[in-house]
Image 1 (spheres, rainbow, N blue to C red):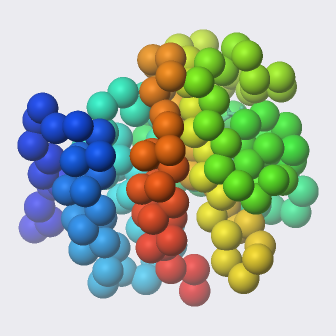
Image 2 (cartoon, rainbow, N blue to C red; image 1 turned 60 degrees about the vertical axis):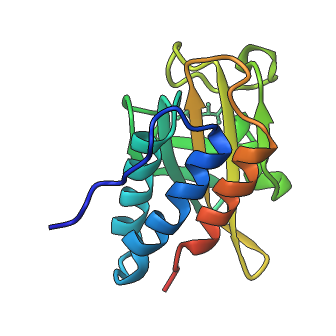
Length: 160
Ligand code: SME
């Protein structure tokens, strides 16, 4: 049986990520199915990190983003690039950190409970294949530490 992700309580965010990363790596190492691995990454992040209200992937399909595996409340199915925070990250091919979603022009509110957000593009061979979107119900939840470790997690995903 698969072990659940183990994270000590009362850790800093950086320490949580440091404990989490090798566990995520092990979790997806022997599985080649993209959807299964993305689903487990969402579960691991939602379980391990504090204040992660919604964690999910959108796939790039033509000029739009289509909802993939996620954990959290139901979400918008399709987002036109470059709309919203997700579309902006896909268009710019770089992470976008939003401390207060109400101050991001064009933010798409899938849930009124979301207060801050980070989106990481998943890039292979110079193309954005997907984005990882994390929403928090707290303001100013995400920073460069999240960008660093979430980018490392995205780099672990095998597209075959
Ligand atoms: N807020 C996102 C939309 C996706 S949901 O948050 C899950 C955006 O502005 O792109």
